[in-house]
Length: 62
Image 1: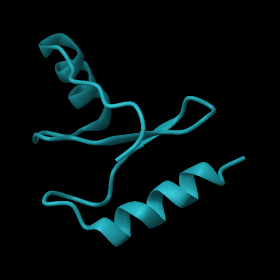
Image 2 (image 1 turned 90 degrees about the vertical axis):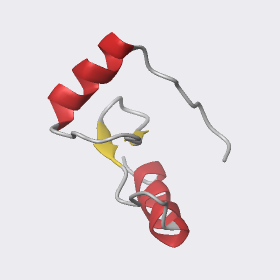
Image 3 (image 1 turned 45 degrees about the vertical axis):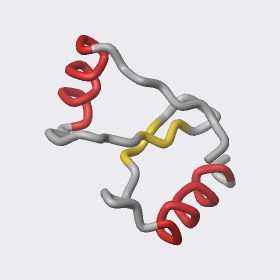
Image 4 (image 1 turned 135 degrees about the vertical axis):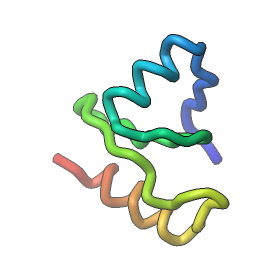
């Protein structure tokens, strides 16, 4: 998948988990152009069509 993929350090992982309320790995975020973010709804293993829909919605966000 094209885009920026980040392998987070332990500190960044803990910070992200605390801020989002997530408690499992892997955790995927969709970061919008305005800097806001949301957790991926695609789950693991990834539900491709759900991910595509969520990415399209995030890209059309104004």
